[in-house]
Image (cartoon, rainbow, N blue to C red; front, side, top):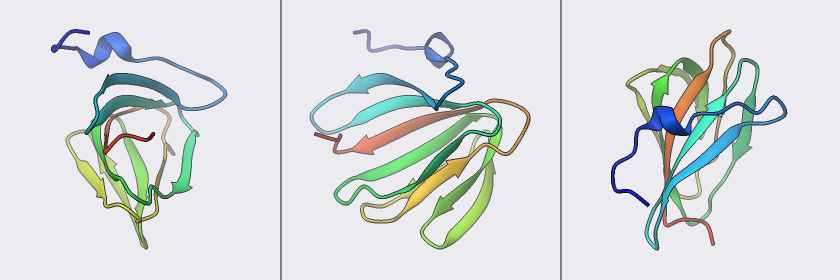
Length: 107
């Protein structure tokens, strides 16, 4: 695996669910790409022992972190500490492309 990746080479579409591509996975960190088509939702969920971030590369969406819901667009980073419920909805007509990091990665 290369130490240098262009996210454009890893984008994809899945009409039935969110398209996910793992860019890197080590013992301390997982970095991936999540691609949400218009109307797709990543339901609110919790990683009890893992911190997570979303960095919006393209588009915009509605993000839930704990009791807060906010719109985030390209250039924004959204953080969810371990144990905090989080999720995202693409309520626009354009794709939403997210760089996602989870530390430590799921086992």
